[in-house]
View 1 (cartoon, rainbow, N blue to C red):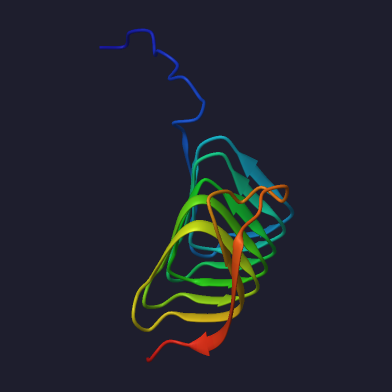
View 2 (view 1 turned 30 degrees about the vertical axis):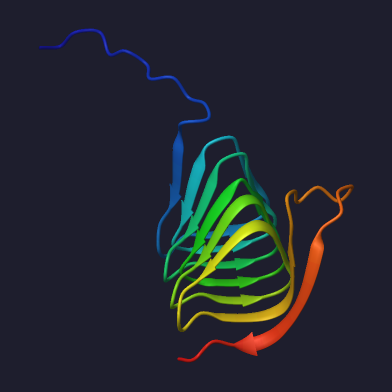
Length: 135
């Protein structure tokens, strides 16, 4: 009943969550997933997934393996694999990705570079977009 509590390992499988009403002024760096429903002013980096909820706001760059954006980003986004912009997403900044999914209603203002790698040393195909999806 009151046995010894075992510590769970912290690492790449850890989930970090910043709820609505949370304000962070500074950089976030993690090896695990991160979900943001509050406001972050600074760089967000993850070796895994970044999820930005509908009430979330990031004022700064995002660098990660995968991302799902439901809220607002003012800054550049660099995703090594898959970026999903949901119907309520609003991104102002350049994106550099391997794969992109844009749902109807998403808003994106900036340049998009798509290719096999987001590494700055790799050659990528560049597409310039300055449009807003219907919504």
